[in-house]
Length: 439
Image 1 (cartoon, rainbow, N blue to C red):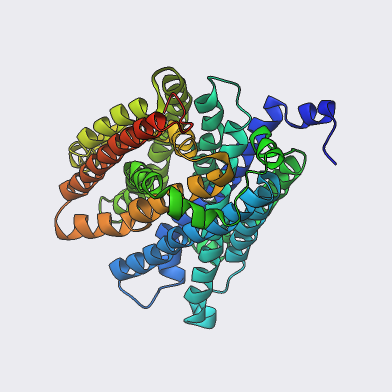
Image 2 (cartoon, rainbow, N blue to C red):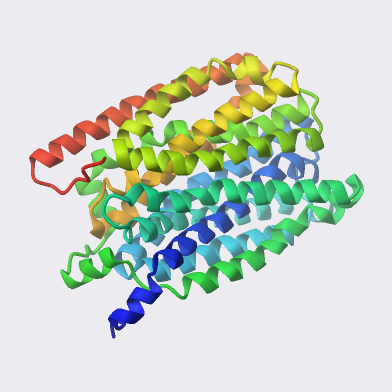
């Protein structure tokens, strides 16, 4: 039975919708980032202790990459049910998958206790994290954008994007707090487990909020018009191949930038540049504050000037920033490192804010959950899964400037993809397809 109009209006009030989209991605990215931090600080010592320091770090980064290869699978599975049975139930299932996998990591035995079984279990849990996040992001963006009033799609769509900086600040803050309260021996004995286990409380909060919302108006309309397709995944590859291809590479620079600014920089800064965790993490957190502040600004610009135009201008700036990376990050001065984080993560906010809305608008309602999720998560494979590994290898073998060149090359590829998105939108508009005017 459909909810009464007053009930539906209450359930889908703007405040509740935006909170539900924000809190879920905050939890998901908190879970994801505590793994990223532990992959640098904890796992090389406790799960890969038989190798030299560099090899252990690379092996840890390999488990980090597993989630990115699992995310398109999660996008396809959760996207199928999101497009077939609804956004709400699928979002709840994705959150539980991610949450249970994260709590399980906090309970794992280490290499010293069970040997090679420990990294295998770690990889399995990381796989679960990737599956959950693969289904989470697309649903959260659709929950926001499909409830947005006219002319406010990018503004609504930026709320789930805000979950990234908030989740990062919570994750990094938890490790900073543990670093201040515990000795190194206590931290590596039990302290590192606390953020993973404590994430269960956040998951319960997220489930409470999401269980109180109703379906989006766009999905209810698709049900009424019987527009659902039998297998959305097949429909995407049969009818929307170019949108999938261009969208994947349109997200490339965003992913490469973020994981260079976070995972690689933390690893390189604390192992090769001589900064302690207590010195480095606060500088990184200041940069993440700028990441969060620029997301709303980018949404306003995207609603006014268009998603693609905003992304093009920002990606050009990212290409230029690639040549500044080594002089700032490798300056030997905390002021240079702070400038590196403020500039790089501000650019991250400008590119990440409109990205969700832009990717979602490339697909019709009937396959939008699957299409947006697949595009975003395939972009994660191409741009993020191996970014820390590639950056570490380049910095070690070629020098830090080559990490910047890698970023600039990624930005050039994204610019070409965004031009392709524009050409595709124009062709669809001529053919009479519904394409968002602001794309």
